[in-house]
Image 1 (spheres, helix red, strand yellow):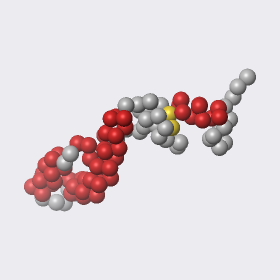
Image 2 (cartoon, rainbow, N blue to C red):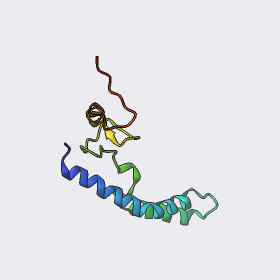
Image 3 (tube, one colour):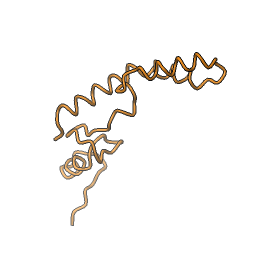
Length: 101
């Protein structure tokens, strides 16, 4: 089980990313538009740099929904390999058959 503080930190990052996404997209569009004056693009770059780092989507880490484990998390199920194996053995994941011989 992961530390609660790590899981909560990641949850805060997800919320911050969701709230800041439109503003970040708008600033990135201004920066990428080569028809805009250089001063306006530079000002947008500075505004983007002044935004909180945790509002960037790359700071969010995929974590297991069950255990909070940060590594070996499958995107489709949002579960770690350990949780998938455990739930698969119990027959709780439809379509998954854990082999045993």
